[in-house]
Length: 175
Figure 1 (spheres, rainbow, N blue to C red):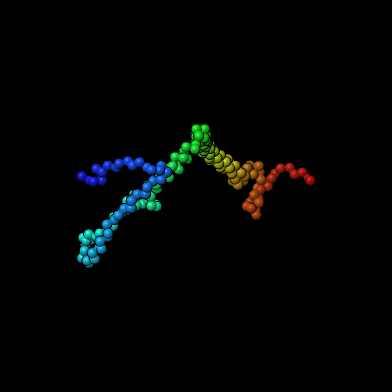
Figure 2: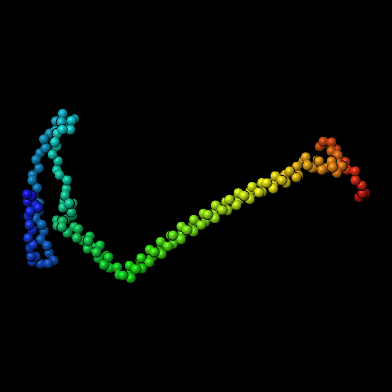
């Protein structure tokens, strides 16, 4: 049986409640000098090299009395939560709920704005197509071939510089 597991700790009466007795220092066995590593063992990795063990939780404490290391942190955390009143806690919860409500409403407003933007983009594209169709119709109405054909229907003749001259047979008024 393990002597540590079966050992019972008897409670001691403290002589003064504000002072604790420091624990007895741990005694370690003296270190044995390590044997030199041979080349063959080093290459194969078969040599058992003695190393000092990893530090335990008690070795990581600060100061001589390592049992007091954890206690101040707990007291500080407990005292912080003890200072908060119920009203302050309720106010904090309401503030968090209000911030969450603002966030959710912001998300919905952003989605609505995105939907409006997409609708306006589609409308803009449709208007651009309609503009291009109307511009094409106007271009067909005032194209040079249409103008020359109408001018010939009115009796005008083409000019030599720009082609055959176009004359108008209408009455000339003296001006």
